[in-house]
Length: 92
Image (cartoon, rainbow, N blue to C red; front, side):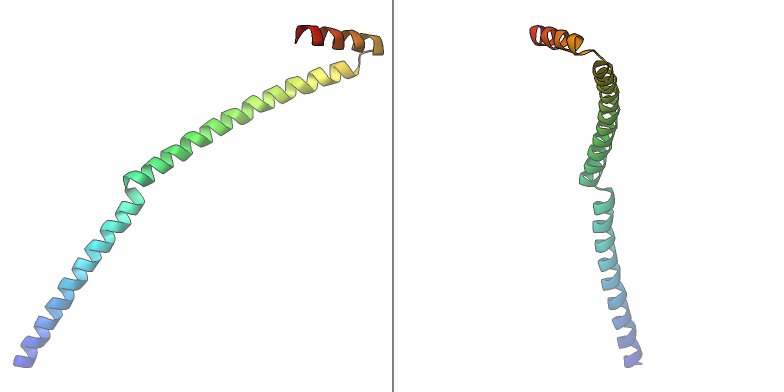
């Protein structure tokens, strides 16, 4: 009878300690996954991704414009090229 009571007490202590450890670990895991810091990092990365995508589009447009200008200038005659360089230096 005493052995049975000891076994039950031991079981209750083990269950209690296991429950406390489980709650403690689940709190920390939830804090890591859903805490303020994680949310801030996620939002920061999301805004950075949006900014970089917009920057890529802007640079692609600028690249297309510069390529067009380059190929137009490449087709100029040498004398027109000299005039263009002179005007470019005076204006910029």
